[in-house]
Image 1: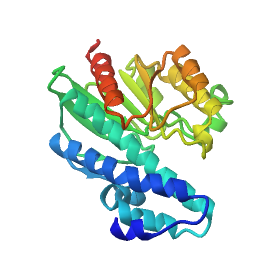
Image 2: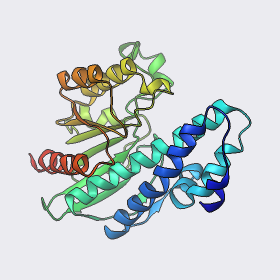
Image 3: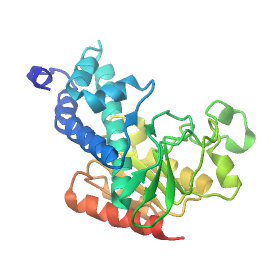
Length: 267
C-alpha cells in the first residue's frame, strides 16, 4: 500500500484510483475479518485478481495500473472494487445474522456453487448464499424462444435461500424456482459510478425487473457504494426494491442489518 500510494495516475483513472486506495483495503479487511469470525476462510479459486484485491490491495492496484490503456485500467479498478464491495455485502449479511459458516467460502463466478452455508444464531435457521449465480445459460438464452429480449447478463450478485442447497448447475438457478424454492433475499450491489453500462439507470431497472420476474424473490434490495439518482431510487422503490445508499455509512449499514434480519426471519 505504501508503494502504491506513491504513484500518481495522470489519466482519466485518477479519481477511480484514489477511491480504490481509500476503499478496497478497508472493505477487504473487514470482509475477511467477518468471514473468519464466522469460522471460515475465503477461497477464490481462479479469481486471481479478486484474490489480490482482497489480500494485497496495494499489489492489485499496481497490476491494474500496469495495463496499457486508460480504459483498461479504469475497467480493472472498477471490476475489482465492485467484487470487493459485493463480498463485503455478503459478509455483512452473515454478520447481521450472527452466522456460523458451515462450510468455507468458495468463489466460482456464475458456476452456481454456493458461496457458503451459514447457521444464524438469531433465527436458528440455516441459509445457503449464492454469489453471482447464473439464472439462465448465457449462450443458450439467445436461442431459447422464451428468453429472447432478456438482458443477457442474468447474474445477480447475492441470492439467499433458506436451508441447505448443493451445487445446482451452471445456468440453472431457475430450476430451483421452477421446483417451488424461491429465494428469501436477493441483493444487487452497485458502485453508483456511471462508468460502466451496468451502472446506467435504465440498465439497472431492466436488470432488477428481470430478477423479480424470474426469481420471484420474497425480498429484493439494491446496495450502492454512493448516492444514486433520485429518479432511479423512486423507480426501484416502485418495483418493491429496498434501496441502501452510501453503504460505508454506519447508519446505512444498521438499516441494512435490520432489513436482512426481518427478511430472513419471515417464513
